[in-house]
Image (cartoon, rainbow, N blue to C red; front, side, top):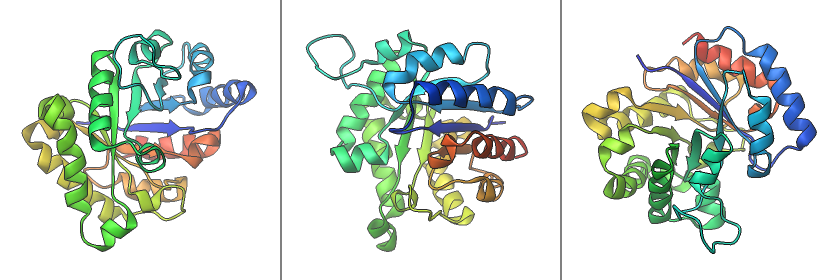
Length: 248
């Protein structure tokens, strides 16, 4: 049975004081859970977060990484090896904000996926459609296209061994959420596309998940947890979502 995962993406939020206070609060709020939990702080706070997470059953993830696998003259880039060196075990790849705001193409996302694997990190591959694409009935076509771009260079088996996050672009930071049935339909489609190997793939839902809607989302058979944005910045709200996943 797939173990649920709730991952908190802090995006460009935080400070040294926030990291210390937030993770201290989570330490007391997450005890006794039988799920996996991860946090994704901004890169400048990863090392600090790693120190505060010592002894706490919460994994550390990065929000992005370089396409380059080694070191070199790539000013501003952070390699997968560097992320592993400060304690990361996970990394987001292809988040919708990286795709839409910074123009990351499917081929760039695929290169980052490969770089993450080469560094021994678990990629959390983000896929999803815009509102225009959904209204045009193109959701499955768009999502499969994003998956195929990665499978073409990494292989479908390696993709199935990663974590996938379905995040409809129109539901991120908007307060709108895909209905549980809409989310389940896409998750089921992803698992079918993956084939036999997809039976054990954890597929998360991301898009305005809150404690108020988490239980119904997580009750669907192919939704294995959540990639949480704004709600991950509030320890009580984030822990409440984690507890909803624990009751799945």
